[in-house]
Length: 400
Ligand code: PLP
Image (cartoon, rainbow, N blue to C red; front, side):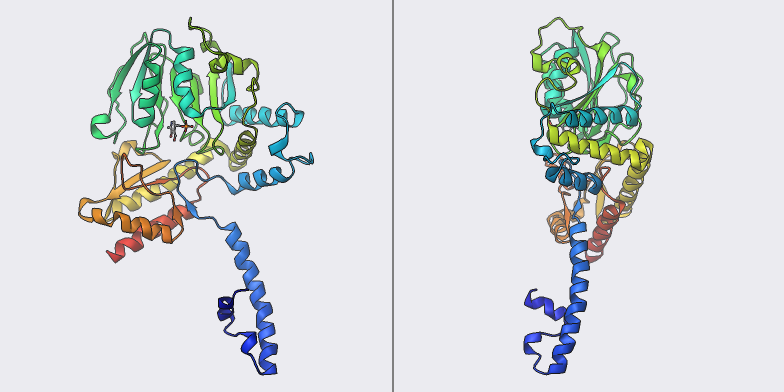
């Protein structure tokens, strides 16, 4: 116990000369120990208010089980970190994770769920490598969409059907036509950097391919409209290291080009994501998240929670005298809420960042392309963190 802690009891035994005082101090010490143990318990239970855009907050449910599995994986006497990916125990993990993907997202027959390495960025190249025969259509909604477009151009004609670049991606383009002769239409459903989101499955003439890195499991998806859905797992699913791919088997094997083995989806379909060593630990954590999602009531329940959190924060931003949102209201993301200070208060941004950090709010700094602030409200973020951020914003506003 530190000396300063004794101030909490209002007494220091070392200076308690009187015996009676010493007896009282012993009693107070016992009471203090009890209080302190409660504080320590809360301290360890408490997390910072984590608004990072990714890697980002994971549920306590997943973290507790992931931590336990590092010590002892499901009673095997081995750590999850040292178990073979070919063991029957890990096979059960990856099978259950794929089955839960199918159950939670209502994935129809004919699709496979893969767990790969390389991040969503590798998918920017794997998608056209495997699916682009002549022409593909892409919607340009920001940085990640652009990176996908750049890779696709290596493989064939790319028709960028619309872009909101001129408006610094503050909206999702709506007025466009997807050519009927495109092999697929690629969209980024949630633009993590700019805070825009396409929260519905479009009706277009060709199958879609979607980067759902930052909004998977935040709403039901009509999977049959897509040939392929992919994403890095480090937002709504797992720690960094695993990439999920949901692919329609029928869409594969149609290109004529030779595909390197590791970049060919068929390799991973045939080998059940075990052609090479998959990211075992990240997949284990993904499984815990998926189990938690099922316990919470599935994607419909998550959607309600997510929409309620985002509505609270946008409401506070809209009511604010000093903060303002950056995105047109109809395209606002429920996962990444971007906001800045109004021009007349612009110079206060650094002060607010420091003010929030002092209160244990982390990860709200906006991406450099937008500036200001970005609060990522992924599935594992509790409403209490959103309320805390709102209170902090109001407190700051009251001071200025
Ligand atoms: N796509 C989106 C929408 C993202 O938000 C990100 C990363 O934040 C990526 C792709 C890139 O993912 P990775 O780092 O896994 O390659």
